[in-house]
Length: 411
Figure 1: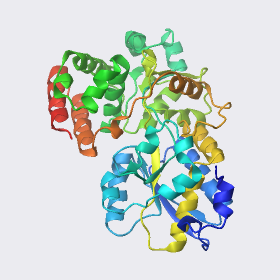
Figure 2 (figure 1 turned 120 degrees about the vertical axis):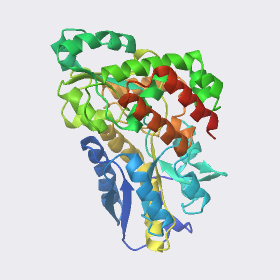
Figure 3 (figure 1 turned 30 degrees about the vertical axis):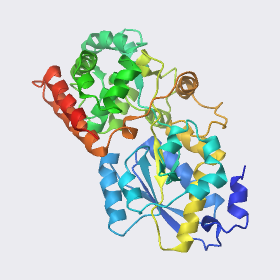
Figure 4 (figure 1 turned 90 degrees about the horizontal axis):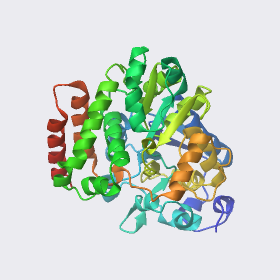
């Protein structure tokens, strides 16, 4: 297999290996929390030290919902960055179809991405009409319940081992002046929790019938009704979680002000920056402790088509570098995510990352919601969840009815 060193130094007719002057590449992303910033710094350090080029950081504050419209507007408006983050799935589909994203197929072939990316669905999500348009950089999974040891110690109850115990312990935390469940008041966080409950508390085929097959009848049925009842419990437990951003909610656990949080494995980066130790200061339950399951979402980098040949060549070097073993390990250990390479050494990973690795090895991963539904459908569900968490007069049954309508109209 061609190594990165060979890729960067060998003489080749391929465009990304053509002789290029040192140049600066602007890279946009929405990684701005403490843990995220530490992770992206690993990418910048590797690019600056292992190539002749330099990384120009284009961080956009806020969530992906804030950043993506800015990124898309720049690309469609003729002011593209050199590289940009999107999540695995369909977020960049229209940009690819419009011919605005660079074809990375030759780079992927030279680097052997089809042999090293695991699970293969991550590369499939980058592929359209047989061509590869993005470099997957990590595996993120949403299906985690994070728990604060300090909060449960203060409340005098054991740290829960599953969702049922978490719900049962909520009154003791409330009595101790601790918020049972931390949750930022943003639709993507609330929808994320909803999806996690669906995956963790129901058979996999129900989740796939709803999001993959767009089965409105199943979405309106008794199985999904149980999930809306669970979301109603979450709404009550999070009633006093008066924060907006996900990392603010994670900080409530770090400071012992909240008992638990449903959030993706990127929360580990915040615990790490705060000096907290997995298994000692906080615990983590993949699949909410109810089921051995994780989705394989995450992040990928796309490279807009540029007119500058030097920048085009440097884009290729960056794409190849992102999947190199050293970068995969350094970046993902800081990010809290898992590498897309199945051949790297993660013996230094913490207790929670080891749990995630074990789940991925023992169970067939599920595709994340972003890989199954469009951004329009996602936004409709997010809006519904925002309303549900804010308006206690909206019943679980009424919310489920509206959810089924959204699924019925989805493409």
